[in-house]
Image (cartoon, rainbow, N blue to C red; front, top):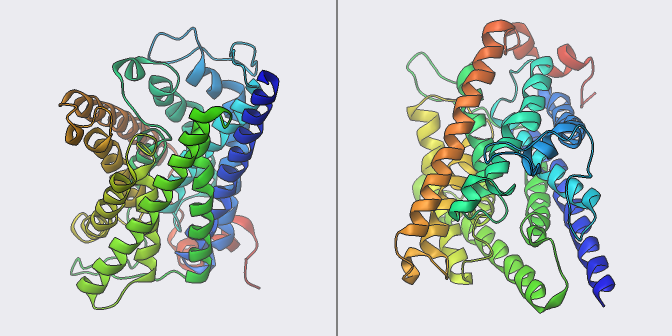
Length: 405
């Protein structure tokens, strides 16, 4: 029976890893659909690069930085491709694959905010740096048994560790690049640059929604036994409810605010609910999940407006709002709505305080390393393509081919 349970848990972990991997084409289609046709090949290439580089670098060094047992609480010991240091009942190779797809997701988030104007060669540099250094270190603080986990910080599947880090890095990258040509007029007003294919974007979001059923329930890392069966079923439910509530909240808000329900914003509203529930999907009730989804879906609209129209930061797909703002909200609301320890359930202020400390420290790490990374590249080599390349499209100039011939 024990052997059977381990086999079942292994299969579940690998199935969840496949679902999370399928989020990679979801991100690719979503980002491509929200941007212009002349940059589609470039965007698809970047989403392949994230996973290809991330797989090799995370296996060789990042896995040790994140889970190395000899590290002090800030960073683990590098493993140099060896997996013998990690001891578990489940196969270490399977756990590595599961963590690799998470690592690739964090890097992929950044590409959307920096779309349509980034040098491909420099994209390779910063994508590798995220997989090699930024993500594994803050991941060690939490999932790797580091100092934040010892304080009781709770992020079940990555609202803070994956999404808010990706969102903050996306924001810093967009600031370093500057807006796309023609995005802001001489009067300072924002001009819409519509994406070329909302069908593609919608399919991408459907794929991401499905992939999230591996992202969140898979983080239980087990399916055998009554406790695990109940846990993954609960996480499936809370994940789906938050996504639905986020999309509905955004749809009705845009209907009231702009006179018509916006498809593009509703798609992001679904993702906002998914990002928000990811931290506490295992510890909040179904009602709590709906509340998190509704709050994230509403805040998303105002966050996109504020970043675009007030701060004049050009984020073509809204990554900094969806992943950054809603990742922060989801982490904090876990401290409010967790049925065991949450403030609204009589748990006092301690858990909320730990959640606040965790998200602040994690995002400060992302912001600091992001500034050094993006502005360092900008100073040393240049981060942005030339004006003619941007005007005519990155596909031909950067890759010598087009998606639409």
